[in-house]
View 1 (cartoon, rainbow, N blue to C red):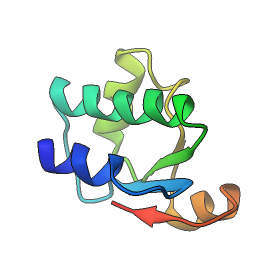
View 2: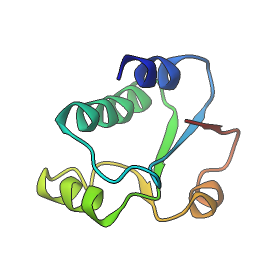
View 3: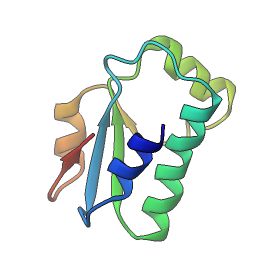
View 4: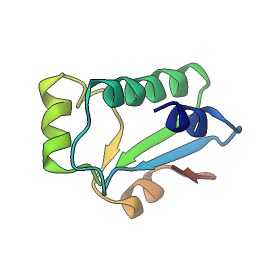
Length: 90
């Protein structure tokens, strides 16, 4: 988990896209890390997007009432079109 947090927070990219398409399930620690990405992005005036979340992951977002807070897109292409600027994928 620390590797993920370090990767997301290093550098000065204005936009970060996190691909969840190969992630079948996340636990509370992972959810906390994703919320941390949201908070730090707002604080630093940066953009981020989570893409390709499975139905199970989206259900967890809804159950925890963060589905309307986290920036999500079904596909990488949709996120790239919506978020103009340079991107760093994690």
